[in-house]
Length: 297
Image (cartoon, rainbow, N blue to C red; front, side, top):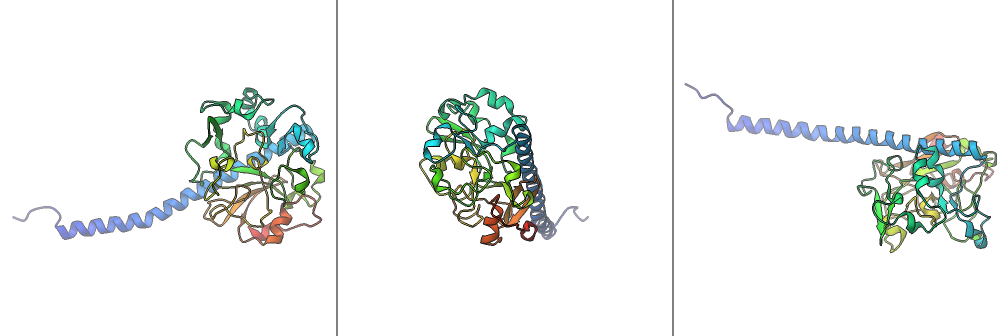
C-alpha cells in the first residue's frame, strides 16, 4: 500500500511557489503602504495650511516664523507679540486643536523650561507633525540635547530664497514666514496658488552638528531657531535623501519630490526635477512672476 504525503520534490516545489508569491506580494504591499503614507502626509500638511488660514482670519495676518522680541536689534522688525517667545508651530497649535499644549508652556522663559525632561510639554509628540514615510524619525519622535527633550516636526513654513540667518539684514524676507514676520494675504501678489506656504523635510542624511542639527532640528518648542520652523530655497535644490542641511525641503516618498502646501490652501506634490528658477520663484510672495506649478507635479 502506498504511503500518503508529499515527496521531497513536491515539498520543495510548494516552498518555491510560496517564495515566488511572497516576492511578488512584498513590493505590492510596500506600494500600498507608501501610498497610504503619502495620503497621510498630504493630509497633515493640508491641516497645517488650514490652521494658518484660520490664524490669518483671526489676526488679519499670518503668524511669524519666529516671534522673537530681542530681534529688533538684529535687523528685524519688532515682534508681533511683545514679551513672548515662540515659533510658527506653537502659534498654529490653537487652530490644530492643540491649544492645551500652549497653555502648558511658559512663552516668556528660556526654552529649557519647556523641554526639561522627557515628560515636559516641549517633548509632547503631535502625530499631525510627523511624516509617516520618514523612517529616520525616532520613535517616539523626540530629540535630546543635554537634559532637554524636543518633540520633532516634519514640516515648516517657507521663508523665501535666503539662507537662514540670525541677522535680519542677511535675509531678503521674501517668503511668507520669517523672524517677526506679519505677512498679510493681500501681500502675496504673485498669487496664492503660485506661492509656497509650507513644505516637508526629512531627517535622512543630515549633516552632523553639536547643536540643533544633532537632534534633527525642527524642535517646535525651541524659541530661538528660525530653522526649526521654516525652510528655504537658497540652494535651489530639493533634497531629503542625499546629504543636505535641515533648511532643505524634501521627503522620502520614493525620493522623487515632496509635498507642498500653497498659500491658497491647496497641496501638491512637486517633483525634485523642478528647475532652479521656478523653484525659487515659487518660494517668493511678491517677486513679480507667476509660475504654473502644475508643470512640476
